[in-house]
Amino acid sequence: MKTRRSWREKLSHPNGGQIVAIPAKMAKRMGQGTLLIPKGTDVDATIRLAKRGQLIKQSQIREHLAREAGADHTCPIVTGIFVRIAAEAAAEDERAGKQRVTPYWRVIRDDGSLIEKLPGGPAGQAARLAEEGQRVVPGKKPRVAEFENHLVRL
Image 1 (cartoon, rainbow, N blue to C red):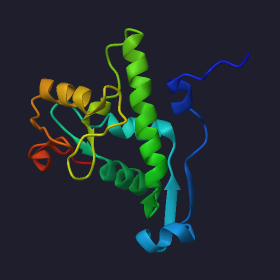
Image 2 (image 1 turned 60 degrees about the vertical axis):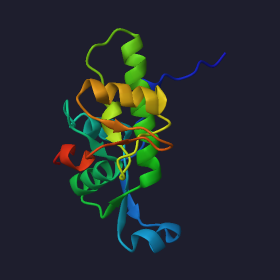
Image 3 (image 1 turned 90 degrees about the vertical axis):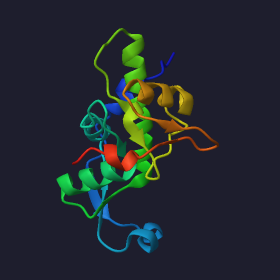
């Protein structure tokens, strides 16, 4: 019988790290140039750059990875998938008793809103951010108040 791979195994998958020409479907939005298909471990490492009290936007993750790899852009779809996998791996690690995990709750959308697909959903993310001194404005799309003042510098 085949067993399910853990989130940590999914995060550590060796694929990724390739730089390709921007596909025609994405060229309208991104223009011409190169596109990094990131590795999960690189996304995870970038999230870890945000320390207590800091936030990191998804676009910052993509820009940092592209700059480090020498590409024009980073694939937003693959990056989003790996943000989720890194978060699930961190939650898995916490359940196993690890104290230091990837601080996925510090990742926000570009408009400062919280991410529904992270462990605990927006309520869980808001609670963890509140523990670190962030103020989350409730609503249909909860968002971090004055998030621009707390962004990590990459």
